[in-house]
Image (cartoon, rainbow, N blue to C red; front, side, top):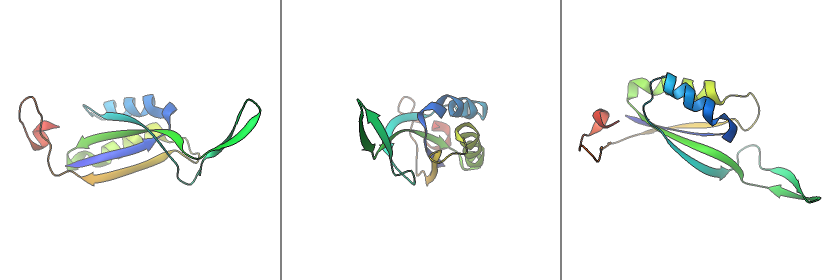
Length: 112
């Protein structure tokens, strides 16, 4: 099993969610996060004063999937998140040792 984690732009969340649902994903976790990569922040103007925003708001999506579904999930995230501009985000894939569904006690793939 794998945990697929993606950091994307806020306004692409609906497209990514739809793409993941179309790919058969049954659940996901969404967290508002802040950070920067190659963008290194941006200049904004507030009441006539320029200031630098070093941590940009993003959304982090986490999806637990069986090994054989990882590429489908990655493709779905890319299709929903890609704008072709800097700051589209990143996808991280982690090994997932175990999953336990609290309500039923099921473990592993059955719990996803």
